[in-house]
Amino acid sequence: MFDGMAVETIDVGPGSLRVRYGGNGPPLLLLHGHPRTHMTWGKVADLLSPHFTIVCPDLRGFGKSFQPPDTEDSRHSAKRAKALDCVSLMQLLGHRRFAVAGHDRGSYVAFRLAMDYPEIITRLVVIDSIPIIEHLERMDWRFARDWYHWFFFAQPGKPEQAINADPRSWYKAITPEFMGQEAYQDLMAAIHDPAVVHGMIEDYRAGLTVDREDEWQDRKAGKKITCPLLCLWSTHDDLEYFFGDPRKIWQSWATKVSGHGIESGHHVAEENPLDLAHALLHFLEAP
Image (cartoon, rainbow, N blue to C red):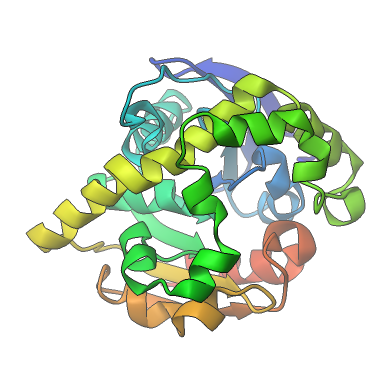
C-alpha cells in the first residue's frame, strides 16, 4: 500500500503530524475515522495516486501524530483545531487549494474544513456521516442503544480505563482480513498506547461540546458549504437505517449535494476500495 509515497512527520505549529503523500495530479486530502490511522486509506490511495496527489495524515490525537493538551471542554481536540492542522499541512506541502474526503470522525474534520475555509476547499466528500447536531436532534432509543459509545466516551476517565484494561478485547472487531497486515499492526500499536486512546476519546468529548456548538452557530448564521459535496454511505452499515437518505440531511448544509450508497460494511476504504475509489474519481474529475 501507498506505493512510491513518502512518509514523514511534519510540524504544523501546535505539534507534528505523521503523513504519507505522493502521486500525480491535483491535491486530495484523505482523513480517517475512529480508531483508524491514515493506513486505512492505503488501497484507495494506490488506486487514486495516478490521478491525484494524495495526502494522508494521522489526525492529531490519533496514530503517531501529536497529542493535544487537555482542557475541560476538549477544545484542542475539536474539529476546528484539526481542520487548521490540515490547512497548515497542505500549505507546507505546497497545496493552496485542495479537495478533501473524510470517513467517520474524519468526515467531521472535512466538513469543518469546507465550512471554515471555502476559499481553499474545492470539493468535499463525507462518508458514513451526517453533522453531529443532526445526529443528536434525530436520535431515538435505538441510536442510544447501538451508538452508546458516543455518550460513554464523553464521560471523564471511565472510557480510557475500560479500553486500556484490554484494548484488543474492546476493539475485537478489528482484523487484518480487509485492511492488510501492515495496517493491522499499525492500528494495534495505536490502540495499545494509552496516550493515543485518550486522544481518540477526546475527539468524542469535543464532538458533544465545542463541535456541537460550532455546528449550531453555523446553522444559526445560515452558513452553507458552497463547493460540491458528495455524500457516500456504506449500505451494510446503519446510517441509512437510523436517519433515512443522508443526502436529504446534507442538503440543509450545502448548496450542491450528490451521493449514493456503496456496498460495504462501515470501513469502506478497506472493504470495498475499488467502488470507493471509482466514486471519488467520478466526483472529483467531474466538470
